[in-house]
Image (tube, rainbow, N blue to C red):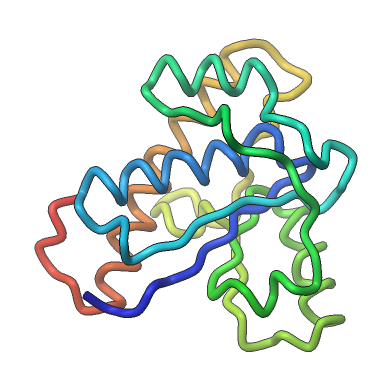
Amino acid sequence: MGEVTRILFVCVGNICRSPTAEAVFRHQADRAGWGGMFSVASAGISGIHAGESPDHRTQRYAASRGYDLSRLRARQLGAEDFDRFDLILSMAVDVHEEVRRLQRLAGADAIEASLFLDFLPGHEGRDVPDPYYGAGDGFETVLDLVEEGSHSLLRTLLKRQGVFGCGC
């Protein structure tokens, strides 16, 4: 097994999109038998929800697909995250711009920071839409994109580490 890749998923408040990505990616990696190769977490560019559980709707829709987000707590992205993680994935373009600004301030140019959906062919440069102010179908859309994106991300990262026939 290769070196552990440390991944941080980032959105605005860390109560909808990024905790969903954290839970889904962890679940997929574990299910495929490669969970030990990854350390995953999530954060928000804002600390407005720090310490809170993911949004109740996020938890409900995620649970309907077998993902448990109940133990996750929102936190704000900090300068130390640029030392702690190898890959920082933003769930939206505006979030990515703020992550890149903070990355420059931290002098952490070597850290790979990109959009989450850049790893899903055909969705490069796009946002995972924020479901917070919408209806239930928005949470389903987030789950659809995060499941597909996590699968593609897992395959990409395993290939980078020289793992072929990953079973994912």
